[in-house]
Length: 388
Ligand SMILES: Cc1ncc(COP(=O)(O)O)c(C=O)c1O
Image 1: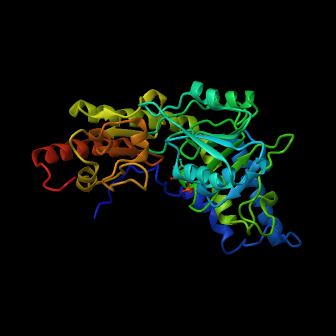
Image 2 (image 1 turned 90 degrees about the vertical axis):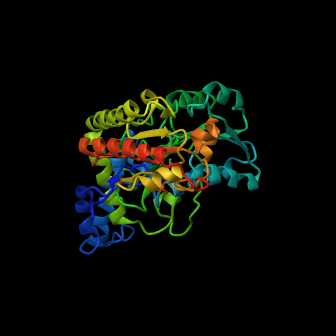
Image 3 (image 1 turned 60 degrees about the vertical axis):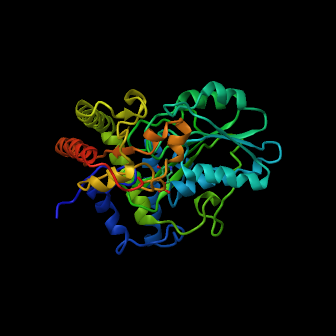
């Protein structure tokens, strides 16, 4: 049976064969623990970790000792928020945005039990937070501002440089969940004035179960405390024996992404535009959720008025796509992200996310356009008897 065309790279990516090749020796032959450097097994593992740390630092224009390895971006986001309780009682306010990933929103709300006040800022109809509103909300009590780089559902790029400058001017820590931009867009934590940043390997052709938190090394140090305690690994910020194959794979994924970044960004942009134009030419009623020029080249989010996402997903059998993030996909319910945009239910209940990646070809895009057009025509000709 032919596999469906994979257009769900925002959910996860396959491991690049070059990444797998780099990882393989670190399972059976080179299995040392980098915390035990009294022998060569441990020392070579430590060197491999140092190399990966360097590759990630290069990807972000950071320093190697500013990279803290975690189990993924969910953990990185949890650490960025929950580890900052040390700022209490002087700083007790956290500002974030309604369209953030649940790993950010849940971590922020978890701080309320400790006495933090969490303010979730609204977005406009295209998904953008207003830096002017953020400036009004920042006060001497603000501990942290957290705004994502690329929205995982609709793909819009938040004004990170402007927000970074605003936070720095007010001496407020700035965290950015950059999972959907990692390895796809240029990220320079110095230029963007970011203090904490989350990345995940499995969104950039590395393995699942590994990620990192960039933590700016400044004077005075950011008083972050570990959420997982034990043997004091990762500078005391994340205990537990390091996942060496995962870290080596993440480092290789970062090296490849950086080397290919600009060419791949342009290639994806062309394919994404081709997909949009192809669908729009045949179906002028489709609604583009956010402008392409201020979006990730890897994400196209469209609403199909009159056709529920549940029916569309079920009928588009030859495409592996999603109706949004994993939690709302095909559930029949509108996503909280689309609700935050204020979209009418005929749009928010009828939305699909197409996400492209390194192995997407022009032929696959042509075939996806054809499938969408055919399927929409079929569904329009046969109204649903189901409640969705
Ligand atoms: C924007 C964003 N943040 C965080 C995460 C969580 O990442 P991980 O799967 O590494 O925990 C995801 C993954 O879906 C994401 O898209």
